[in-house]
Image (cartoon, rainbow over all chains, first blue to last red; front, side):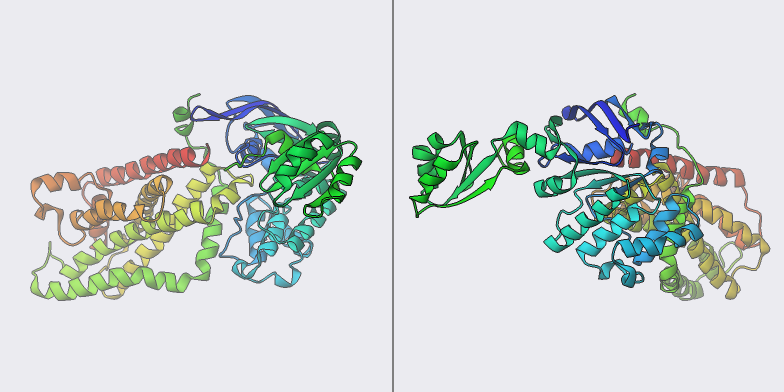
Length: 303
Length: 263
């Protein structure tokens, strides 16, 4: 049975359709990523799946339980790492876990049994009795992740789990998420970091304007939507060069900021051309998810 | 189902509100002593300042000293203040600033449980404030009756009423600044109109009628005789009005909180 299914979901706010008919299915044990620019409807989708808001139409089921009708029962079996930090600032790390466990109806004894392992998992065993205010951003995120595991959930929702973290802290979170996947947990992740999605997710759906516009494994998406080779050309003469030479030597050239991206299956001739132009700086790399994302959602700024 | 109908659905009561109550109590315990002293300072200053200062110049009010008259008013106003502050400033911190409510609702606890937990917590805290004033008044010999123990349930219901009305404001408020209007337009007039400092019947007729619709009037009308060893007249009306505010306020707070948070 799927861990989560959503069918034909729709949700509008004040006449504006935020979720415009999406279907999702999470298989047990996979990491599923929901990608999209700001305002694409990612967080609303999570809120719908948790039963915190009702869809205008469509159906959701979590472990076979209908949401929102049985949302409370469904939430007993999931863990949530929200986008905005909401640890209890009045409590220590240990107290945060204790109080959160009580919301699940767990006895203090049972929570106390689980806490040491969770603090260990968060790398906070020696900070157990520190106040939250004394913890760094990365520590808080890890504690929030540990808090989401207090009820030993089979499915974990993470809403942009590494936004605002430094590279070391992000890598540590990713490593912990891989541990959870190895334990057989199912993960539902939203992110706008393509490297995060590429590293962690088995399957992804790219959302834009309330719809899923592409889905598949990272590799499938790259294969299906983009040429395999990319050359990024920077600097003053880049735009002029792209118009005069780049466009004809590649299959597609696109400009973002002061960088020109040239895509091709056979990139050799274009590289040869650039070799002879020392005034232009460039970077040759294989296509990645970010290229797919920008191609599908456009290069305009989203606010 | 339209949104309005959805938000106004009857509350779904459950014992899970206890988890929310316990969380707040656990935070309070860390600062219990300063918090209690803080709650006590204001009513004590009024009572001693006005009671002894003004009381010297005044004849007895209904056969009791002015300070004893004032003590009963202070028990009620301190209950009102404590519940209002908790539901608004602290409640708004938990709902909006710290997002504690969001965290709780990601667990198998509903918004209904949270709002009940907050209302009962505000009432519990206000009950403690009322008791503190009552204890001091008793120590000063201003309440000498076992009947005064009946003031406790009155304070609790008063606490639910003002806690719920405070939560209505919290659910509507964009920021802390908004609460000043409520205090200026609602709480301060009640301090002056509801019989805390002087009997309601000293007011012009029109204001007396207005006072009869304010919840604090009914709390004072019950607590003052009880502290003076008298069974209050018109119990049913006073209890009825307090319950009306408690139930109505709670229902309003819940509907508005649903509208704000469950969209």
